[in-house]
Image (cartoon, rainbow, N blue to C red):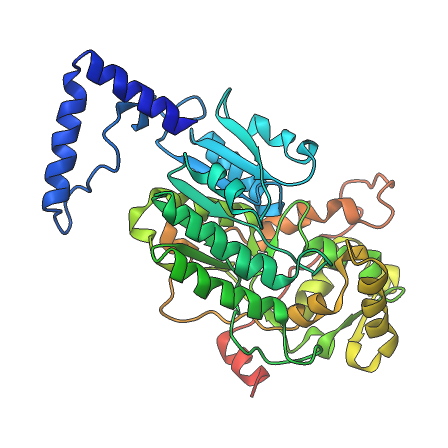
Length: 416
């Protein structure tokens, strides 16, 4: 749509002999002929309709026409909201019923949000979705496999297909959401052979890089926020055994560095606007590191389901075959949507310690001010409190103590 409008405006300008277009063409040509190392960047288009206009904000146009694959997912909603607030035009591909995506219409101003039906395995529908855009964001992913889509279908073949078609369509920027801890051969803990999820994410990165060499890749740790699959996963009744929480090594040998979803979304927007982020990899991690045991205990204190008041306890899942059997049966009986998100692939991934590589930039390098878990999690877990119907008096319940961060020296001792 945007390209049609731009072409029409260019034809009108040429017909009426506008001098503006001529100046822009000359400037773009001279910049392309001898691009300075640190000077102004050459124009990608000479059409005035593609330039920024307005004073900034929702009713302006910031020059970005973005196609967001996976817009209906957890992270996608936040990305679309921030794109709309900054005056971007959005094309949102969707599959299934359009009622799943229609709520995103209000994330942008009137006429700024368009929907397009697509199939991840249909190149023609993907090409239609990206041909008018200058930015493509791939947020498509799966937490569990189904009979229609395996991890490789989504994280590898699907990601490569979108990246390749975006490059063929002349898209300027491609941003791909991967994962922290990706590697070709992850260590196996519960599932033999290691996490297939992490393997597919690793291979997907390689295929995306081959298809679109200047792609920006963001590797997030566990992402938390409203309607997430991290806080809600541990708050769900199906994740527990009665009132006990089974964790690998009681969660004491797993270190996590969760990141807030709004911070990840802001990083994606900043990367789309920053030409220097092209071709780089960013680690999306929170500001603090915690033992998984500390986090889960804290979650239950916030939900008023602690040991003293509710009988909560934590134990090593390795010695509970009934829980491991429950996870396997859950994925077998409910293959489309496992109850509570509990399945063997998730258990394997939750036991992996977050590895932050030195020398690889983080969200702070994209200008994002990180949100701490202590700021946000109490609000997110409020709906999961025990006896939520009870209207407590001010000060009746003491404020739960926050989780303890783990220092680098203690972490080294933990894995010695």
